[in-house]
Image 1 (cartoon, rainbow, N blue to C red):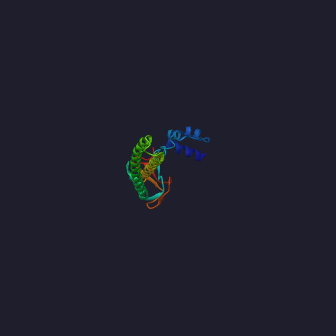
Image 2: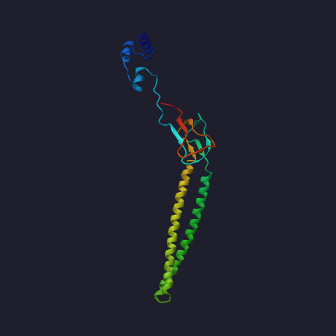
Image 3: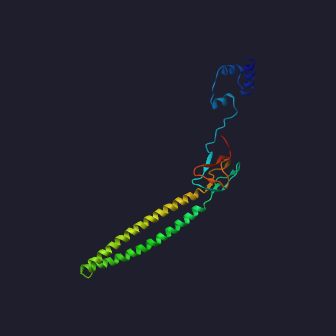
Amino acid sequence: LRMKKELSSILAKNTGQTIKTLEKDTDRDNFLSSKEALEYGLIDEVLVKNDKEVLISSKFAGKIIYEKGLGEKVKKGESVLKIDDTALKAKLKTIDENINTLYNKLNALNVSLKTLLNTHKRTEELLKVKMASIEQYENEKSKIASLKAEIKATKNNIRIQQQNKKSILNDLAYTDIKSPIDVIISAKMSNIGDNAAPLKPVLKISPKNGNY
């Protein structure tokens, strides 16, 4: 009973509540929400984890070549993590070379098709006056069909290479990860030289103003 009175006295001093109120409220288990505890005077403030806290991870596997240190302040748009992009840039170069080669091939095929179509048109006119053979006509017709099929396949290959290029460029954007807001590096799960695994967090950033 003495201890209860001492506790009520201490609580009254710190909460601003009367001893009578405290004795009534502490007579049995009494559960308060964080807001109710704040209003009652039991706590000074409610610390809520900021919803802008972000875990940083890489989209793909790669060696970490740059990383902000724990506790460092970072401005909006500033890099917090960089992944080695040497392999991606090499792939991009190869894709650009492939696209260039395919376009050259496509141009040559289109020239050949145009020439063959003109030839075939003349053959058709000659065939009407029996100055060309049906075999020649059918042979040209078959070549035209083959050229059109090859042109279609080449265009499809170009589209595939362009899609691959778009994917590589998208991945390259993830090799230099920038902060979306002014932050502080609040946690590190990796170091420079480590290999970042896809989607595995390597850093945690928190707003500079902390909790709210």
